[in-house]
Amino acid sequence: MSVALFESPARPLDRITTHALSVVCGVALALLFVPFPWSWLAPLPLAGLFWQISRSRDARGAFAAGFAGGLGFFVVHLLWLPVSFAGLFGPVGALPMPFLALILAAFWGATAGLTRLLAGRSTLVALAFAWVLLEWLRGLGPLAFTWGTLGYALLPTPVAQVADLGGVYLLSLLVTLTASGLAGLLRGRWEGLALCVSLLGMGAAYGLTRPTPPAPMLEVLLVQGSVDPVQRARARSVSELELYERLTREAMDRGARPALVVWPEGAVPSAPTQPETRAALERLGAIPAVIGAPNFAADGVRNSAFGWNGRAVTGRYDKVKLVPFGEFFPGRNPLGFIYNPIFNGMGLSGLRGTQPGATYPALGLGNIRAGAYICYESTFGAVSRALVRNGANLLVNISNDAWFGATLGAEQHFQMGRLRAIETRRWVARDGNDGITAVIDPSGRVTERFERFAVAAFNARVGLSDEETPYVRFGDWAVILALLGVGVVVFSRWRFDESERL
Image (cartoon, rainbow, N blue to C red; front, side, top):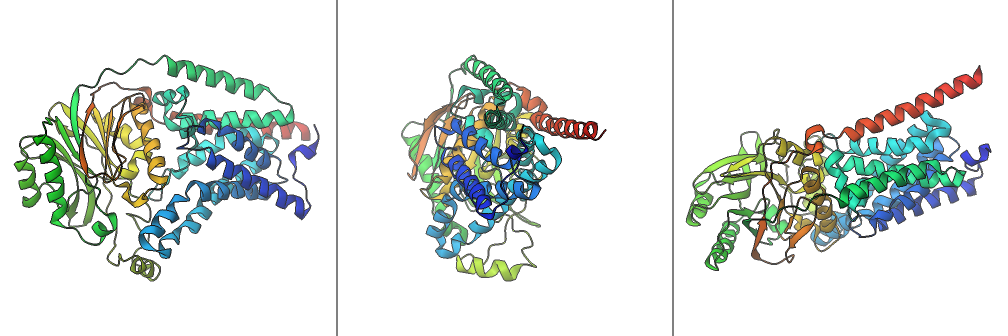
């Protein structure tokens, strides 16, 4: 086979063309991605990007191709971010976007370059495994950011049901292997694609034969206050507590008899342990509830969900996965000369961030054991998995997507969260400040979805489950499979090179 197939042309104009094609592949991937129903076509543009990376002359060229593709993808996929924040805070709100896109594109570039360096002519195969490792690494640590994880592309298909076996990274591996198989056709190799078609076929068969979840028998009341997030960030008011109490009372006056009431992330300015909030809940009667509220402690404030059994607080969950540069600001004090002008321009001069939690307790509310995770955490399979392992028989996702406005950001967030239901085979009751408020069944289907931006309390039905899926039991074993895949490809390449030298 000609070496030219593996090398990009050396002329500057040809290199520019190659990188332009990588950008086009990244943009096309973003336009095909979640939340669009045609996201299952994502392997097509990804195959184009993998092809550009694999034919690079060296690791430097592969880095450039991966970086260009990543820049095209994240600028389009996250376009809602500067749009929504500029709408809330003016031009200063759009400032973080270029830096975020460059950092995320650099992750793609580094993965492409390192894979090309280690795998050589086997880069195309190795990329399928390396990309999954990249996604896993992006989900670690305090700066974790999982937007753009490829496995979500399969959500509109029955194949998504295999997430109960290995989580979102197993789906990502199916997407990347398919992309490598498609790119392999350009080299006259069809074996990889044939294998992927077989795997996808088995995945679809598995998904189509999953049992239908039992009918939901438990009534819940999801209260959506639609409070201005900027005003709430600048100053809390007792009127917020009065609003949620009123909406809940009006629903009960209309005949609602919920087994559980849910108020969204940070719904009220003080915790149910404080007299004012406690008194409001007691006036509603002996109704169990999950309440989103700040928790003020000696070492700082935490974003928390409280369990209330109708008489007293039964437990508290403190948000573990904080939003980087939204709830957690690295180097806030020493880098104040950078943060302060930006925060002042946004009218949030007192913004300091919150402290993370460390554990994943389920909130005991009679026969309900609520795994109450908060907003951004719905994009991390490990969070809901930990809550279920600790006894949760219902997942409750409280959120505040009002920061996204009417952009695609809220829809992307919501669609990613659907996979948590499949991974754990749990019902998910989702309550957002201004939406998306909805119920998701253990198959990931949206059974009830309510009007966004409405100020209302919605009656819905959920079920309880004690099933333990393979994903809950074994976790992200697909990452280990990806690591082994990279190791085998790299080892085989070195053995081949060594035999050629001999």
